[in-house]
Image (tube, one colour):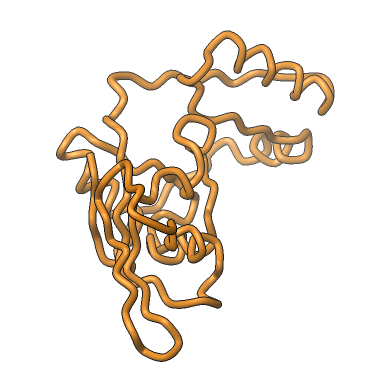
Length: 169
C-alpha cells in the first residue's frame, strides 16, 4: 500500500495504476486528469477524499526535493513510522515550491473500497447543511468519504441542462 513515484506523475494515472492492484490514491481532485502529484503535495491539496483519508501531511511518507543550491534532499522513506530525527518532509508539504522543488513522493495508499454508496440530499438552508453533515459524520464515522454541497443556483443550472454530456480524451 505504499507508492513511490516521480513528482510529474498525473494523479489520475496513479489512481488507475493503483486500482489494478486493489488500492486507491488517498487524494481525488476534479483536476485529476492533468494535475501532478508533486504539485498536489507542494500545495497540500485537500480533495474529495479528505474526510476519509486525511490530508496529504498524514499520507505522504517521504519526499525527494531539489533545494535552491541544486543539492538533493532525499527523505524518500517508505516507512509508516520513522523516529530517526527531524521530519523534514513536513517543511515542503504545502510550501508551494518556495523551499525546494519536489521531485519524488512516497505516499501511503489505502485499499480500494469494496463498495461505494452515494446520497443526494436536499436541505432548505445552508445552516442545515452543517446539521446534516454532523448527523452523517456521527452515523457513518470514518466510512464517510466525502461531503459536498451545491447551492440553489448550481441546482438550477443542472436542472436547465438535463442532457449534459461527458467528454473523454
